[in-house]
Length: 80
Image (cartoon, rainbow, N blue to C red; front, side, top):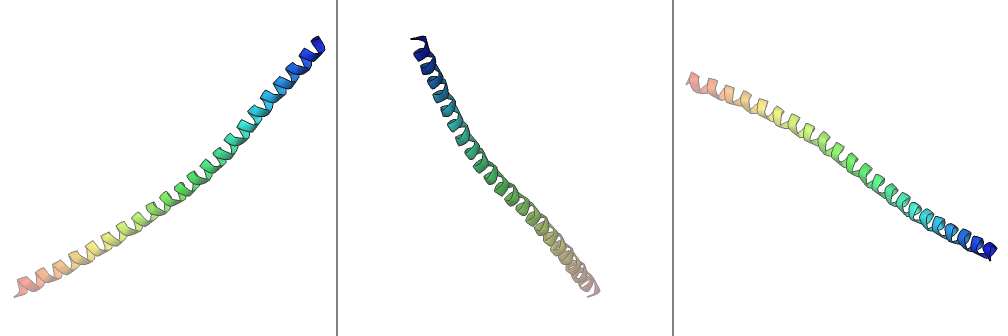
């Protein structure tokens, strides 16, 4: 009967909509996990960048100290 076909069609449509909704929920959960991981990666990269800047400053400071020592040694060598 047409009424039974309509009920079957509605049931089928609802079933598909529920399946779509369940898949969408899975995608939402996965996206949330990806966003969390991306945030952690961003924090790690930021920390590494800050550390590399600190290391660069340390190397520059040590370079200046070595250059100063070399100049002093050269002065001492030229005095002898």
